[in-house]
Image 1: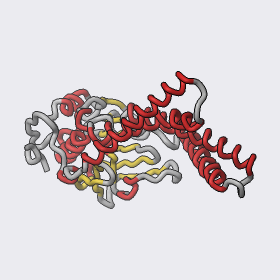
Image 2: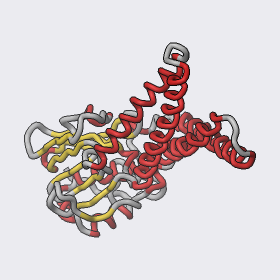
Image 3: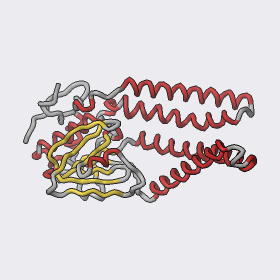
Image 4: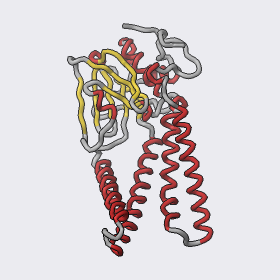
Amino acid sequence: MTDTPGTVTGRVPQPSEWAGARKTRYVLIAFVFALLTLGGIAVAVSTFGSGPSDPRSGVIILATPLFLGVALDVLLTRLLTSARGARGVRTGQVPEVGEPGLLVPYSATLTTIHVAAAVVCFALFAVLGIAAAAVVASQGAHGNAAAAVIAIVCLVCVISLIVSGVLVLRGKLRRGVLVLTPRGVYHCSWSFSTYADWDTIMYVGAADANGPIIELATKDSGERWYRRRTRLRRQPELAFNPHIGIQARLLSADPALVYQTLRFYQRNPQARTELGTEAAVQRVRTRAVVVADTAR
């Protein structure tokens, strides 16, 4: 099947499955956490200006970067995804594929936010856990059951974050990337990797699972594989296996543009030879991947 790209100005048309996203809810969440961030900054200014105060102020100050991270994450992954355009699209090669292709890495900004949030959470749970443990040590678990529960919960959270850190250092958790090559499509997510050649992909679809998902429906025959690096992290797109599911909100490019790009090359085999060259990058940047039957 071959489709002719249409000329598109303005926003790239997105699939109908994403049109029902409740952006009002995300605006409210971003607004609330932005207010919490401002409140935390106000507490920090007051505390540092007046000297030692209520220990709870320290908890609020520690949590302030986390509030900011949540606000930024919601803003970048729910409200401003179309503003990314083709910013992250480039040519390159990954070892697992063995040939050059069109690369769409996961957003470096989002990755930084997630790492920073994990560090802040580690510090927050460690401080709370130590404080709770001190209370239990002085009063006993029976004297302050709430402190004992807090200490246990914080310990579990700290251990979980340490395990995640070890997985990152071992390469089991890593920043993902989507690669389109003349031969097929490779997707490396946080904890697993998948691949399917173009002849195996029946169609490119869309779904919504707490955010926009791009689905590559595959046949039972043909070259395809799935490799999970760790089972300690559960991701929503795993539910699409043996098909390929991609959390489009995590990519460094407009999710709708990535969807249209995959759809174009799946429907136009003769154009796949340009994948891995600047011609493909230019095609995506000029939005010449939106096929005529989806242009609006």
